[in-house]
Image (tube, rainbow, N blue to C red; front, top):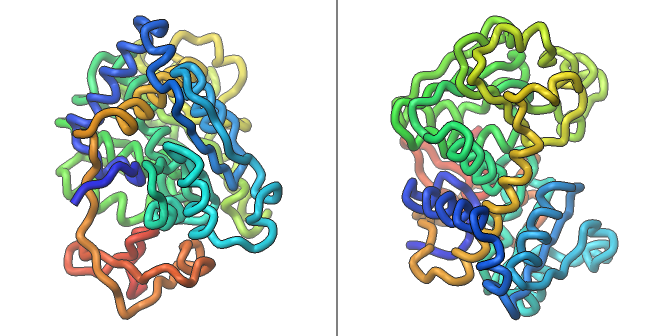
Length: 356
Protein backbone atom coordinates (compact mmCIF):
# COMPACT_ATOMS: atom_id res chain seq x y z
CA UNK A 1 0.00 0.00 0.00
CA UNK A 2 1.02 3.62 -0.48
CA UNK A 3 -0.10 7.03 0.75
CA UNK A 4 0.82 10.70 0.45
CA UNK A 5 2.21 11.05 3.99
CA UNK A 6 5.88 11.39 4.90
CA UNK A 7 6.32 9.88 8.36
CA UNK A 8 9.64 8.07 8.05
CA UNK A 9 12.34 8.61 5.44
CA UNK A 10 13.02 4.85 5.53
CA UNK A 11 9.77 4.38 3.59
CA UNK A 12 11.06 6.51 0.70
CA UNK A 13 12.88 4.85 -2.17
CA UNK A 14 16.23 6.22 -3.33
CA UNK A 15 14.45 7.31 -6.52
CA UNK A 16 12.00 9.39 -4.46
CA UNK A 17 14.79 10.91 -2.40
CA UNK A 18 16.69 11.81 -5.55
CA UNK A 19 13.51 13.26 -7.05
CA UNK A 20 13.33 15.69 -4.11
CA UNK A 21 17.03 16.55 -4.54
CA UNK A 22 16.69 17.18 -8.29
CA UNK A 23 13.61 19.37 -7.82
CA UNK A 24 15.34 21.33 -5.03
CA UNK A 25 18.32 22.00 -7.30
CA UNK A 26 16.03 23.22 -10.08
CA UNK A 27 14.31 25.60 -7.68
CA UNK A 28 17.70 26.90 -6.48
CA UNK A 29 18.78 27.54 -10.06
CA UNK A 30 15.61 29.38 -11.08
CA UNK A 31 13.42 30.33 -8.09
CA UNK A 32 11.34 32.80 -10.13
CA UNK A 33 9.93 29.91 -12.17
CA UNK A 34 8.24 28.53 -9.03
CA UNK A 35 6.65 31.67 -7.58
CA UNK A 36 3.15 30.51 -8.45
CA UNK A 37 3.62 26.75 -8.22
CA UNK A 38 1.24 26.45 -5.25
CA UNK A 39 -1.14 29.35 -5.85
CA UNK A 40 -4.35 28.83 -3.89
CA UNK A 41 -2.91 26.08 -1.67
CA UNK A 42 -2.76 26.24 2.15
CA UNK A 43 -0.13 24.68 4.42
CA UNK A 44 -1.01 24.13 8.09
CA UNK A 45 2.00 24.11 10.43
CA UNK A 46 1.04 22.48 13.73
CA UNK A 47 4.00 22.84 16.08
CA UNK A 48 3.42 21.44 19.55
CA UNK A 49 7.13 21.85 20.30
CA UNK A 50 9.49 24.85 19.85
CA UNK A 51 11.12 25.28 16.45
CA UNK A 52 12.87 28.00 14.48
CA UNK A 53 14.31 26.55 11.27
CA UNK A 54 11.84 23.76 10.55
CA UNK A 55 8.72 25.81 11.15
CA UNK A 56 9.92 28.97 9.43
CA UNK A 57 11.49 27.14 6.51
CA UNK A 58 8.20 25.33 5.85
CA UNK A 59 6.28 28.59 6.08
CA UNK A 60 8.78 30.40 3.86
CA UNK A 61 8.82 27.50 1.40
CA UNK A 62 5.04 27.67 0.96
CA UNK A 63 5.05 31.47 0.65
CA UNK A 64 7.80 31.34 -1.99
CA UNK A 65 5.68 28.85 -3.93
CA UNK A 66 2.73 31.26 -3.91
CA UNK A 67 0.71 29.46 -1.24
CA UNK A 68 -0.47 30.53 2.21
CA UNK A 69 0.00 29.21 5.74
CA UNK A 70 -2.13 28.72 8.84
CA UNK A 71 -1.42 26.96 12.13
CA UNK A 72 0.05 27.47 15.59
CA UNK A 73 3.46 27.39 17.26
CA UNK A 74 2.08 27.03 20.78
CA UNK A 75 -0.61 24.41 21.42
CA UNK A 76 -1.77 26.39 24.43
CA UNK A 77 -3.15 28.93 21.95
CA UNK A 78 -5.33 26.24 20.38
CA UNK A 79 -8.10 23.93 21.54
CA UNK A 80 -5.42 21.49 22.66
CA UNK A 81 -5.33 23.61 25.83
CA UNK A 82 -8.98 22.64 26.38
CA UNK A 83 -8.21 18.95 26.13
CA UNK A 84 -8.98 18.35 22.44
CA UNK A 85 -7.62 15.04 21.16
CA UNK A 86 -5.08 14.74 18.38
CA UNK A 87 -7.71 12.93 16.31
CA UNK A 88 -10.18 15.81 16.51
CA UNK A 89 -7.55 18.49 15.86
CA UNK A 90 -6.23 16.73 12.74
CA UNK A 91 -9.73 15.92 11.44
CA UNK A 92 -10.67 19.59 11.59
CA UNK A 93 -7.39 21.03 10.30
CA UNK A 94 -7.40 18.70 7.29
CA UNK A 95 -10.70 20.32 6.28
CA UNK A 96 -8.99 23.74 6.25
CA UNK A 97 -5.62 22.98 4.67
CA UNK A 98 -4.26 21.19 1.60
CA UNK A 99 -1.19 19.83 3.40
CA UNK A 100 -0.11 19.58 7.06
CA UNK A 101 3.33 19.80 8.67
CA UNK A 102 3.35 18.62 12.30
CA UNK A 103 5.93 18.57 15.10
CA UNK A 104 5.20 17.01 18.47
CA UNK A 105 7.27 16.04 21.54
CA UNK A 106 5.64 12.58 21.78
CA UNK A 107 6.99 9.67 19.74
CA UNK A 108 4.68 8.30 17.06
CA UNK A 109 2.39 11.33 16.97
CA UNK A 110 2.91 11.99 13.25
CA UNK A 111 1.93 8.42 12.39
CA UNK A 112 -1.11 8.69 14.66
CA UNK A 113 -2.10 12.01 13.06
CA UNK A 114 -1.84 10.53 9.58
CA UNK A 115 -4.61 8.05 10.44
CA UNK A 116 -7.09 10.92 10.65
CA UNK A 117 -5.84 13.38 8.03
CA UNK A 118 -7.64 13.77 4.71
CA UNK A 119 -4.65 15.61 3.21
CA UNK A 120 -0.92 14.82 2.91
CA UNK A 121 0.87 15.03 6.25
CA UNK A 122 4.57 15.60 6.91
CA UNK A 123 6.41 14.57 10.07
CA UNK A 124 8.54 17.50 11.26
CA UNK A 125 9.83 15.64 14.30
CA UNK A 126 8.14 13.37 16.84
CA UNK A 127 9.99 13.42 20.13
CA UNK A 128 13.34 11.65 19.96
CA UNK A 129 12.06 9.35 17.23
CA UNK A 130 12.24 10.67 13.64
CA UNK A 131 12.76 13.87 11.63
CA UNK A 132 12.51 13.01 7.90
CA UNK A 133 12.52 16.54 6.50
CA UNK A 134 15.73 17.39 8.34
CA UNK A 135 17.17 14.34 6.63
CA UNK A 136 16.06 15.65 3.24
CA UNK A 137 17.82 18.90 4.19
CA UNK A 138 20.96 16.91 4.97
CA UNK A 139 20.68 14.89 1.74
CA UNK A 140 20.31 18.01 -0.42
CA UNK A 141 23.34 19.50 1.35
CA UNK A 142 25.46 16.39 0.80
CA UNK A 143 24.46 16.13 -2.85
CA UNK A 144 25.32 19.78 -3.50
CA UNK A 145 28.50 19.95 -1.42
CA UNK A 146 30.01 16.46 -1.79
CA UNK A 147 28.51 15.63 -5.18
CA UNK A 148 27.41 12.15 -4.10
CA UNK A 149 25.31 10.20 -1.62
CA UNK A 150 27.38 7.03 -1.66
CA UNK A 151 30.93 6.08 -0.66
CA UNK A 152 30.82 8.41 2.34
CA UNK A 153 32.29 7.89 5.78
CA UNK A 154 29.96 9.73 8.12
CA UNK A 155 30.68 10.47 11.77
CA UNK A 156 27.64 11.21 13.93
CA UNK A 157 28.43 12.77 17.29
CA UNK A 158 26.46 13.70 20.40
CA UNK A 159 23.06 12.51 21.57
CA UNK A 160 22.57 9.51 19.33
CA UNK A 161 19.94 7.96 21.60
CA UNK A 162 17.39 10.78 21.43
CA UNK A 163 18.65 12.40 18.23
CA UNK A 164 15.78 11.99 15.78
CA UNK A 165 17.83 13.69 13.07
CA UNK A 166 20.54 11.05 13.52
CA UNK A 167 18.07 8.17 13.31
CA UNK A 168 16.50 9.50 10.11
CA UNK A 169 19.82 10.32 8.44
CA UNK A 170 21.22 6.86 9.09
CA UNK A 171 18.05 5.32 7.64
CA UNK A 172 18.44 7.36 4.46
CA UNK A 173 22.19 6.98 3.90
CA UNK A 174 22.07 3.25 4.63
CA UNK A 175 20.19 2.88 1.35
CA UNK A 176 23.23 4.00 -0.66
CA UNK A 177 26.23 1.88 -1.60
CA UNK A 178 29.40 1.75 0.47
CA UNK A 179 28.43 4.30 3.11
CA UNK A 180 29.98 3.67 6.52
CA UNK A 181 29.29 5.21 9.90
CA UNK A 182 31.20 6.16 13.04
CA UNK A 183 28.79 6.46 15.97
CA UNK A 184 30.41 8.84 18.48
CA UNK A 185 28.67 9.15 21.83
CA UNK A 186 28.86 8.29 25.49
CA UNK A 187 27.64 4.77 26.33
CA UNK A 188 24.51 6.28 27.86
CA UNK A 189 23.58 8.10 24.62
CA UNK A 190 24.38 5.43 22.04
CA UNK A 191 21.97 4.80 19.14
CA UNK A 192 18.90 2.64 19.79
CA UNK A 193 19.14 -1.02 18.78
CA UNK A 194 16.59 -0.61 15.99
CA UNK A 195 19.02 1.78 14.25
CA UNK A 196 21.80 -0.80 14.52
CA UNK A 197 19.35 -3.33 13.04
CA UNK A 198 18.92 -1.04 10.02
CA UNK A 199 22.68 -0.74 9.50
CA UNK A 200 23.09 -4.49 9.66
CA UNK A 201 20.11 -5.10 7.39
CA UNK A 202 21.77 -2.96 4.70
CA UNK A 203 25.22 -4.44 5.31
CA UNK A 204 26.70 -1.08 6.30
CA UNK A 205 30.01 -0.92 8.11
CA UNK A 206 29.85 0.93 11.40
CA UNK A 207 31.98 1.45 14.46
CA UNK A 208 31.26 2.69 17.97
CA UNK A 209 33.48 5.46 19.33
CA UNK A 210 33.66 7.39 22.57
CA UNK A 211 36.26 9.92 21.33
CA UNK A 212 35.66 12.65 18.76
CA UNK A 213 39.37 13.50 18.58
CA UNK A 214 40.29 9.91 17.76
CA UNK A 215 37.57 9.49 15.11
CA UNK A 216 37.61 12.76 13.17
CA UNK A 217 40.72 12.13 11.07
CA UNK A 218 39.32 10.12 8.15
CA UNK A 219 35.71 11.33 7.95
CA UNK A 220 34.04 12.75 4.84
CA UNK A 221 31.24 14.21 6.95
CA UNK A 222 30.98 15.10 10.64
CA UNK A 223 27.38 15.42 11.80
CA UNK A 224 27.37 17.14 15.19
CA UNK A 225 24.29 17.19 17.42
CA UNK A 226 23.51 18.89 20.71
CA UNK A 227 22.84 17.08 23.96
CA UNK A 228 19.09 17.60 24.21
CA UNK A 229 18.21 18.93 27.62
CA UNK A 230 14.48 18.46 27.00
CA UNK A 231 14.92 14.67 26.60
CA UNK A 232 16.41 14.21 30.09
CA UNK A 233 14.24 13.57 33.13
CA UNK A 234 17.07 14.39 35.54
CA UNK A 235 19.02 17.65 35.34
CA UNK A 236 22.09 15.94 36.86
CA UNK A 237 22.13 13.42 34.02
CA UNK A 238 22.02 16.25 31.48
CA UNK A 239 24.83 18.18 33.20
CA UNK A 240 26.98 15.04 33.17
CA UNK A 241 26.60 14.66 29.40
CA UNK A 242 26.41 18.15 27.95
CA UNK A 243 30.12 19.01 27.61
CA UNK A 244 31.54 15.60 26.73
CA UNK A 245 31.79 16.27 22.98
CA UNK A 246 32.82 19.74 21.84
CA UNK A 247 34.23 20.42 18.38
CA UNK A 248 36.96 23.04 18.71
CA UNK A 249 39.94 24.19 16.64
CA UNK A 250 42.27 21.66 18.19
CA UNK A 251 40.09 18.72 17.17
CA UNK A 252 39.29 20.20 13.76
CA UNK A 253 43.01 20.41 12.99
CA UNK A 254 42.99 16.59 12.92
CA UNK A 255 40.33 16.50 10.17
CA UNK A 256 40.80 16.36 6.42
CA UNK A 257 40.58 19.57 4.43
CA UNK A 258 37.62 18.25 2.43
CA UNK A 259 35.57 17.06 5.41
CA UNK A 260 32.34 19.00 5.89
CA UNK A 261 30.65 19.79 9.21
CA UNK A 262 26.87 19.55 9.44
CA UNK A 263 24.54 20.22 12.36
CA UNK A 264 20.73 20.22 12.39
CA UNK A 265 20.78 23.20 14.80
CA UNK A 266 20.13 24.73 17.24
CA UNK A 267 23.68 24.72 18.52
CA UNK A 268 24.36 25.12 22.22
CA UNK A 269 28.06 24.68 23.00
CA UNK A 270 29.04 21.57 21.03
CA UNK A 271 30.72 23.60 18.25
CA UNK A 272 32.84 26.56 19.30
CA UNK A 273 32.00 29.84 17.59
CA UNK A 274 35.49 30.27 16.14
CA UNK A 275 34.81 27.35 13.79
CA UNK A 276 31.95 29.19 12.06
CA UNK A 277 34.31 30.88 9.59
CA UNK A 278 36.05 27.63 8.61
CA UNK A 279 35.08 26.71 5.00
CA UNK A 280 34.25 23.21 6.19
CA UNK A 281 31.51 24.51 8.50
CA UNK A 282 28.31 24.28 6.46
CA UNK A 283 25.59 24.19 9.11
CA UNK A 284 24.17 27.64 8.32
CA UNK A 285 24.21 26.96 4.59
CA UNK A 286 22.62 23.59 5.37
CA UNK A 287 19.58 25.39 6.81
CA UNK A 288 19.20 27.33 3.54
CA UNK A 289 19.33 24.11 1.54
CA UNK A 290 16.53 22.87 3.80
CA UNK A 291 14.13 25.52 2.59
CA UNK A 292 14.63 24.46 -1.02
CA UNK A 293 14.26 20.80 -0.07
CA UNK A 294 10.96 21.56 1.63
CA UNK A 295 9.76 23.58 -1.37
CA UNK A 296 10.49 20.53 -3.52
CA UNK A 297 8.74 18.18 -1.11
CA UNK A 298 5.60 20.34 -0.88
CA UNK A 299 5.34 20.50 -4.66
CA UNK A 300 5.81 16.77 -5.14
CA UNK A 301 3.30 15.86 -2.44
CA UNK A 302 0.66 18.23 -3.80
CA UNK A 303 1.18 17.87 -7.53
CA UNK A 304 2.86 14.59 -8.43
CA UNK A 305 0.31 11.76 -8.46
CA UNK A 306 3.09 9.20 -8.65
CA UNK A 307 4.86 10.53 -5.55
CA UNK A 308 3.32 8.12 -3.07
CA UNK A 309 5.17 6.56 -0.15
CA UNK A 310 5.00 2.92 0.83
CA UNK A 311 3.32 1.88 4.06
CA UNK A 312 4.09 -1.15 6.20
CA UNK A 313 1.74 -4.09 6.55
CA UNK A 314 0.38 -3.89 10.08
CA UNK A 315 -2.12 -5.56 12.32
CA UNK A 316 -4.00 -5.01 15.55
CA UNK A 317 -1.96 -6.26 18.48
CA UNK A 318 -3.15 -7.83 21.69
CA UNK A 319 -0.40 -5.93 23.49
CA UNK A 320 -0.23 -2.26 24.37
CA UNK A 321 3.11 -0.54 23.81
CA UNK A 322 4.98 -0.09 27.09
CA UNK A 323 7.18 2.76 25.86
CA UNK A 324 6.23 5.67 28.18
CA UNK A 325 7.15 8.11 25.40
CA UNK A 326 4.77 6.56 22.85
CA UNK A 327 1.71 8.46 21.68
CA UNK A 328 -0.54 5.52 22.47
CA UNK A 329 -0.12 6.28 26.19
CA UNK A 330 -1.84 9.67 25.88
CA UNK A 331 -4.17 9.12 22.90
CA UNK A 332 -5.81 5.97 24.24
CA UNK A 333 -8.40 5.63 21.44
CA UNK A 334 -5.63 4.77 18.97
CA UNK A 335 -5.68 1.26 17.54
CA UNK A 336 -2.84 -0.92 18.84
CA UNK A 337 -1.10 -1.21 15.49
CA UNK A 338 1.97 -3.39 15.16
CA UNK A 339 4.24 -4.84 12.49
CA UNK A 340 6.64 -7.74 12.41
CA UNK A 341 10.42 -7.40 12.18
CA UNK A 342 12.86 -10.29 12.50
CA UNK A 343 10.17 -12.33 14.22
CA UNK A 344 9.46 -9.59 16.76
CA UNK A 345 6.26 -7.59 17.18
CA UNK A 346 6.97 -3.86 16.92
CA UNK A 347 4.83 -0.81 17.73
CA UNK A 348 3.74 0.88 14.51
CA UNK A 349 3.91 4.29 16.15
CA UNK A 350 7.26 4.39 18.00
CA UNK A 351 9.11 1.35 16.55
CA UNK A 352 9.73 -0.20 19.98
CA UNK A 353 9.36 -3.91 20.67
CA UNK A 354 5.97 -4.65 22.20
CA UNK A 355 7.33 -7.34 24.51
CA UNK A 356 9.99 -5.06 26.07
